[in-house]
Amino acid sequence: MTPDPLMTETTPDKRLQRLVNVVQELSLARNLETVTRIVRTAARELTGADGATFVLRDKDKCFYVDEDAISPLWKGSRFPIETCVSGWTMLNRRSVIIPDIYKDDRIPAEAYRPTFVKSLVMVPIRTMNPIGAIGNYWARYHHATEDEAQILQSLADITAVTLENVQIYSELEERVKHRTAELEIANKQLEAFSYSVSHDLRSPLAGIQGLVQVLQEEYGVLLDKDGKELTDLIEQSVKNMAHLIDNLLVFFTTSKKELRSVEVLMKEMAIEYFNLLRKQEPPERSFEFSISNLPHAYVDVALIKQVWLNLLGNAIKYSRKKAKTVIEVGFLETPADIVYFVKDKGSGFEMAQYDKLFSAFQRLHSDQEFEGNGIGLSLVERIIARYKGRVWAEGVPEEGAAFYFSLPRTLV
Ligand SMILES: Nc1ncnc2c1ncn2[C@@H]1O[C@H](COP(=O)(O)OP(=O)(O)O)[C@@H](O)[C@H]1O
Ligand SMILES: [Mg+2]
Image 1: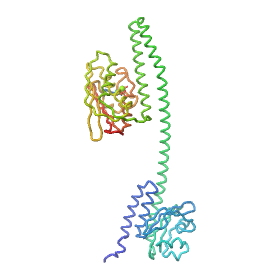
Image 2 (image 1 turned 60 degrees about the horizontal axis):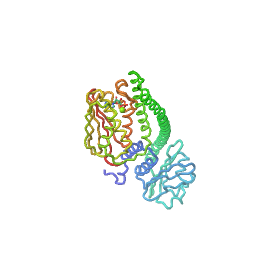
Image 3 (image 1 turned 90 degrees about the vertical axis):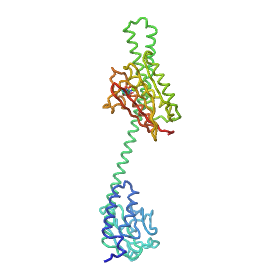
Image 4 (image 1 turned 135 degrees about the vertical axis):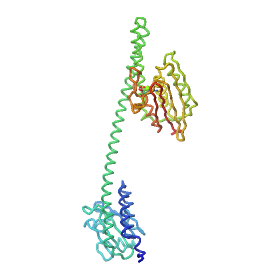
């Protein structure tokens, strides 16, 4: 027996399959618009009706949120809950099947006259305390079956659960947003405080620096060897602290600072800072410095200066125990960006401790071995992150280390 061609569209099996799909789609919906879109199409497809509406209760009004129909129904309109059939469904908490709308006094005939509707079925969304309704409409006389009403009711039940989930989800999202905003404020306050403390520490430190200088210049002759060594140590410590403060000041301003990116001659810059740092080392220290033709970068000069100072400074510092300091600066090109690197043949580090490398105030070497504060690399990472670049490193104990950072090819 060949099936009735009119029935093939909505066999029970197909309906069930469609309903299963709708459940899956709705389970992923995170906002009302998505739920609306899924429900209005599914409602029509499930019964093969000529039109479907998705109605939500808005206090004492029925709000016709959306529809899918052969010609316009009431999308965007609000009707008093007592005067429309979706209102009747919500107030009576049950579905209604109306084969002929002009013979039923629950129907405001004048609202239907401009439409194609002759027959309908309407089901409440959430039967306990309805929050809306789903309607199906036919252009020709159609006495909706119990099956049709039931499958529509199933859709309405899933919709109810989904809407509750959407509500919970958006509340959660709201809460997360609120907490994040609070944290951001707290973070900004903390940074502003740290910035001003660092800033205020500068002037007493400059005082100490000046006094040590006076001590060395005017009382140097009066000091014995131990005395001289002590003043040198004070001077060195003061320098370290000044360096820390400078780094902290940059650290706390990088996230706020507006990027002023220009074309930077990376090779010239690296050479300039290498020479500057080298001058601070004892003249007898032996260096072998090589640099390739680095591509230009589009970055903020003040920020990228900190990257070079810290990476070259580290390469020099952590090579101190070697007879010769060998430093190589180069680059690699990838389709997406340019990778610059600084390699040295110094003390290196254990890859097992890699996790600590870029964390603020974390050090892989002791203060006795090498002085430092552990802020430099975290600053480098923070700066490169502002350009959406990456920073990474490789190290072998006693053989050396290599530090890489990537920058975009063009202005960002
Ligand atoms: N070139 C390098 N060779 C070996 N270890 C390094 C090198 N650069 C950095 N490190 C390790 O990473 C740690 C963090 O570096 P950094 O943030 O610059 O702080 P600092 O140099 O003040 O200790 C250092 O304490 C050191 O253990
Ligand atoms: Mg350092």
